[in-house]
Image 1 (cartoon, helix red, strand yellow):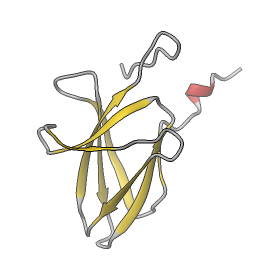
Image 2 (cartoon, one colour; image 1 turned 90 degrees about the vertical axis):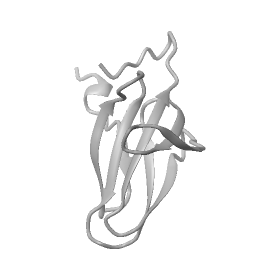
Image 3 (cartoon, one colour; image 1 turned 180 degrees about the vertical axis):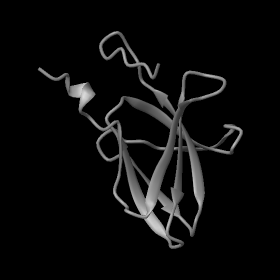
Length: 105
């Protein structure tokens, strides 16, 4: 029998021209860093959702410094706007407790 987490997509996006290129552990915390970019030279609006228990989402710079805190709804995710070839880096803090016990590594 397959464990549901083995076949589940941890992150989903709904725009074909936006690529989720990087998923990694943050350099200075247990947060998760995502790097996305618009690949076709156009504009895009994308919903990013996670099957993981996300508590907070920050827009960061390339050094992973928090710039803007976004609201995140576990059911609806977060909506992002992209310009042509724009790269967006996000840092996600997870809601981890004894019941869900999720960890990146």
